[in-house]
Length: 524
Image (cartoon, rainbow, N blue to C red; front, side, top):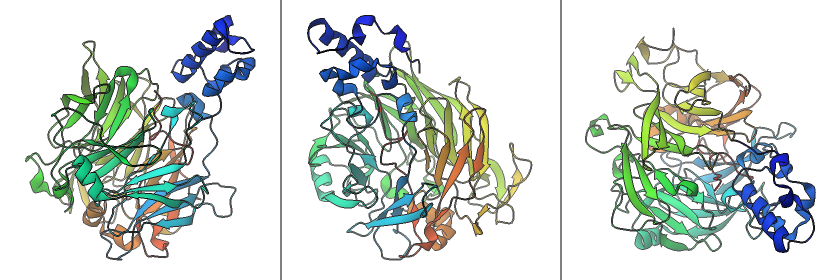
């Protein structure tokens, strides 16, 4: 992102005093530059902060003025992690764990609070905020509610994390029948806050478990359902994740698969039958209408999608799970959108596994706030990767570490041919525990120096691919990041073992910091 130095700001925009006449216009000009991401807060001439109207762009309201300002935010001290008991046979509700990640704390790398949900079988999955950096500068907004949609029950939990961030409490429950009747949607996934103050949640399908891409819109204060975001009579055949960018009048969503098929695990017989996603679905942000489909390959299953953080950038990346490819999507000169494959993780020829060709299974991706690095996890192969994306069309691998997976030595899988590795990696053991499962959800610290990893994907698939996860519980790890030349190193002093939970081993999924992060904040 190009940031204008303070010296390049027109002199008249840096005047102090009351905001009246030309000074008021100048103040608004700087406000606009700040809110559009061109001027970091610390580049603004101090007297400007005394202008009353400048409070809209000061250190107030949720989030940060720019992604680069976010990188200078405080170090994370706690992390919220949904923990799942569905499919474990333990008859306990899912819960929200609060994990201490402050190395100065005596409770470092421990769960310090658990908030159980009031229902069984929800399958908590991803989470989002009531408000984020898309509302930066609005002093009426506070990031004090965590939104927890349920992947299976379609219930929505709203959690109060503002009253006591270290001990969240339940604030509101939106019942699934309200979602079904008012929106004709179900199987809820991604939650994003909007600049309007509303909350938007994507769906995988309809209430019956058929595929259907759509979005539930919640009021950002009352959390009552307002209806569907999408308009018109066209909907994509499936849904999953999404990201929006108002400067380019676009929202792009992805497709995992048909919910009633996914619920029983991964079935190779479902391939070549249109049951897994293959499209990036492009929406007109202003009219809320579905306008374009971008084909990334049959049974690709594109999951997590991320625009570059610079709100002027008209490009980003999406990770395709089954095809194990990263595609760059971008706006063309014609004004529509296209995609090109820029990374392919080769499958390995194996014995002792579900199929003779083992894909990497890319399940999560993210981009550092300065748009320098792309990270992703290969859940089946077991590695986390770091790519330099200075040239977005030619990502360059600069870091890789194995923290589990299905191909480690001594396991049931024998690798017959491998285009990347000379030998199978050693089993990953940390603090005496052999880690079950593979790296799945990832979250990066604001400064880009610490990458957190959990190992559970989805309980039905966990049970199938890594049955030890259900018996021993998943873990949360921390990987140290070289942000100069690139490189990943496991922090051996950090381990959260969810196999030791009081209610029995559970599966931990997505991670959120109270102050926001690079996968939940969008700059507009």
